Amino acid sequence: MSLAPAGRGGKAGTMPAIPSVDRVLNLPAVRVLTEAHGRMLTLDAVRQLLAELRERLSGNLDLPADAFAETRLAAVLEQRLVAARQPRLRPVLNLTGTVLHTNLGRARLPDEAVSAVVAAATQACNLEYDLTGGARGDRDDLIEPLLREITGAEAATVVNNNAAAVFLALNSLGLRKQVIVSRGELVEIGGSFRVPDIMARAGCRLREVGTTNRTHLKDYAEAIDAKTGLLLKVHTSNYAIQGFTATVEEKALADLAHQHGLPFMVDLGSGTLVNLRDHGLPQEPTPMDSLAAGVDLITFSGDKLLGGPQAGILVGRRELIARIKKNPLKRALRVDKMTLAALEAVLQLYRDPDRLAARLPTLRLLTRAGADIERSAHALSPAVSAALAGTAQVEVRPCHSQIGSGSLPVDRLPSFCLAMTPLRRGKGEGSALKAIELAFRRLPVPVIGRVSEGAFCLDLRCLEQPDLLRAQLGDLRF
Image 1 (cartoon, rainbow, N blue to C red):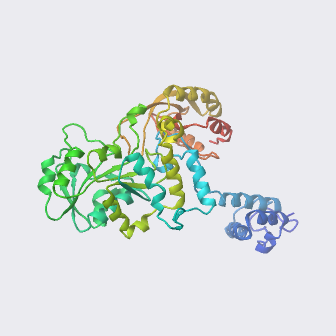
Image 2: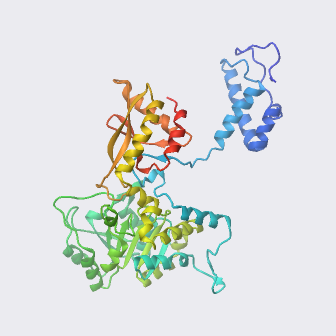
Image 3: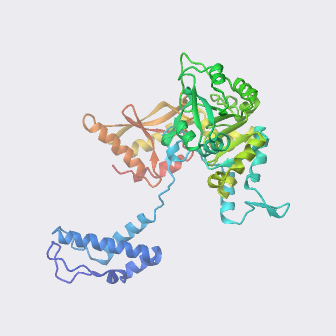
């Protein structure tokens, strides 16, 4: 069925008048789309399509002879409606070699956490209800006992990310006071988050001590006066200063702070709840290490090395946590039931350290054996080579992964990748690489890799579903 009168051609100027919106909506094939996608979405798509056709006609542009055929109109509308309902937040395959990739969602949750989130999202739950006393409760009670047990802290609370944890702690403990920090620790993380800016917004006055590469205990001691509110140490997790350097140990700073009746706070940034050396990884400081050194308050992330949902965790002395929880900003920064459900499930895994590496995706991927990655690369290589025949040469190469999200920035993990080198050289090489990269990003489940040494590389450290990649190789379009 066509809405064009018989005998009309396909050239601009000879096409019929644009049909009405109602007439298109009442086409049988379009009514099917309305039933599937809803009237409002279909109506918007019809209006947009007719406006485009009208614009082409007014510009004397050619249109296909069947531009108004029912089957063509329905096909175009269906394509647009499906695209409009495509989720903006989509699963991807992270083959960049960065395990905790900030742009790709950081830590993947374990199955236990996913199940807990589903239960919390689909049922009523005791978010702020004390089942024992039958009265209103505190949502921190859901995870504080676990955090105390694992870290050994007196108390704990949780907010929506570590930046919020730092801000809330500074605002609660250092408002209108001086906060002393080494110049070598005035970090900036992604999104232009800078420690000096956060201090200013929190109502604190920054007092820098030492130099970029060397800070001594006497620098802190000489800066303390009646206006000092606390001492702050920031773990430089996303960069390293090497060479002629000096920093002050946490225990020495804790002793100095306590001599003056001041709290000592440490921002660990990424944070980990296990000794990474036990798993063959470079060591990162833990909250337990800081507490043992006498630190009063520690902040760290939940979605990085800990392997859980996005959250900012604060652990430390009971009276300091109590002050922080009384801050009105705490409510503005609190986490929801799904975050708490996921965090509790992940923390439960830490109670079984012997099986943690197998059950926690972050630790499993970081500790994945190079030989296993190499076998996966060789198994996939023939299929990828066939899909890129005539476009690129595919080879298995050794490479290095990184932890990511500001964790251990100078340490690399041995890995293997599939490297795709374009067969075209010269001027077209750069565009050929971009074409390969784009083709993988356009797959039903987008594949995100990286360009390195003239090749598009897929680091297979994080690929635990090789069949998913193999199954969609036929959809590659260059």
